[in-house]
Length: 479
View: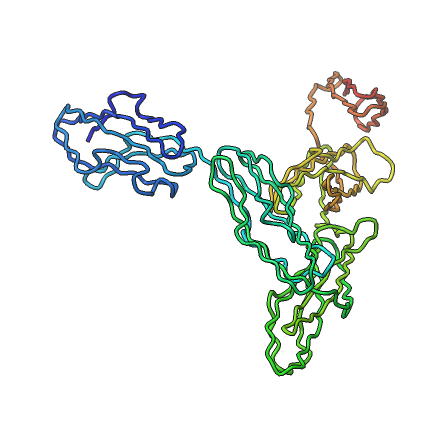
């Protein structure tokens, strides 16, 4: 079964980068190089779903192709995408008698706009009169081209506003918008449906906003939380329903550090039902200012319960305390696992603080790269290199700090340096009453002079050998 592509360069059929609605056609000539007639089908196993849609990528003929010996057949490849298709490389196979043989490769893509919002409805819930609430939404460009955008801001007035109102978004970029609700009349519900954001060269995006203006309720209780950053603390409040009706409540949190169940049901006359509030600070308190938030329970009778939430976010504890025993004069690498707790990439500056010994010691090195980048929500190993010329106990604090937010994590690392053992064995053999000699290289990598002391009872040698900084010399031993 020898089916060959006549022109070897055509084993890779490049369809190019096309736009939606365009049609690209290529012709591939194949020949039956066997001694007998063959009947076969073509087969493609598409790796991306966009190519599985009908009439996007077609080959003619496809089924029941019969070729006599040395006969040539021209295959027509058509690429007609209707929307964005990411870059692909698909193998076309010959299927004959249950066997698959590769024929040629198809490659190409369809470049198009692909812009979306991370949410299409923002419910502000109850907002107190003469205050305002702000929510953030993201515009994502996952396509191949950039485009200008502009919001229909007239439909937002007078209760809502958005910033920025217009701009440009490039491929692979995201734009953050601040949507603000500033109600002007107590008890009035505000609803803006299908606010359009016009996209240059593409279909407009739609956003719906809703909210209700309420009078300022009195604070029912202040709930305090304390925990280390990136950990959690849970407090429980008790809720009671003194009416004869069942309440299905939808609590509303203000403040990114708190969370709780989205809904809670209070049966008629139910007393002291627990509701758990969890404090998960991702940032430390700045200038000793506590995190502040609120929890509001809108009640069916038009009133509500308002809780003030105060959070103290303490410094993080060490990720781990590591202890290792390392021979001196032996390079050692410790892997420190760095976790990115955010949903965006972070760059950490690495700071190695030597805690023990307290005075600088040039006989040891403990370092790695100055910076490490970690993708969103992922983990990455950092290589900490350690080397010591002498025995001792060395302790350090390795800090990984985001220089933009000043958030950090750290490891406590301790190395106990033990003797290195015999570096090299030198054999010296000589007849009795004759002299044999050997040379030993003494290297001083430190920037200051050191003196090597020696001890060999059966050989002639200098008991002390001085070596200048950053140099080496050879000492001679006689027996």
